[in-house]
Image (tube, rainbow, N blue to C red; front, side):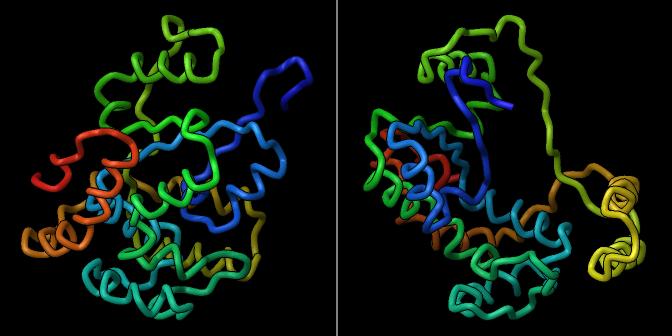
Length: 233
C-alpha cells in the first residue's frame, strides 16, 4: 500500500490504453500523472489475445479466424461467440480488428496527455534488454535505479488447459458460485500447462498484417520508432 512518503502510486492494466474513460479518470485523480505504455506488434498481440480470452472462458469461438471475422459485430455490442459470465466480459475487447489498433489508441492518449508525461516501451526491448529498459523507466520516473539488484524473470507465459473438460466444469462452477473463488483459482492453475501460442496460418497472418499496416505506420510516427519489422516479418 502506498504511503505519503512514496513518490508514486502505480496501477496497471492491459486495457487502460483501449478504454475510452480510463485516461480521463486517471487525470482527474492526478493531472500530473505519468504513463508508461508497453506496445507490441498488433499481429502478435491478436495471436496472443485470442488464446488468452479462450483461456479466461470469455471467448467461445475457439477458431481464431472465425473470431477475427466477428470483430465488427462485437464492436457494435454483439456478444456473438462470447460467453456471458456474470460481471465479466466486454465484447469490444474481443473485437480484435479494432481492439488491437494501437496507433489510434496512442493518438487518443497523446491528445490528452503531454508527450513528456508518456514513456513508450516495445515488448521486444523488454525481452532483449530488460536492464536497460528498467533503467530508462527509473530515469523517466526520477527514482533510484535499482537494476543491479533486480531479478528479471519471464512471467505470464502462454498457458492452455491440460483438460478442456475439466476447464469447462470449473467455468460452470465459477459461474454458479458453487465453490469458494480461491479453490476454483487453485484448480484452474493445477489444470494449466505452459505452452507457446500456435502460429497463425501464413495466409491468414498476411491478412491480419495488411489490416494493421496503416495503424502501425501511424504508431511509429507518433512514438518516433521504426516499426517496419512489424510490417515485414
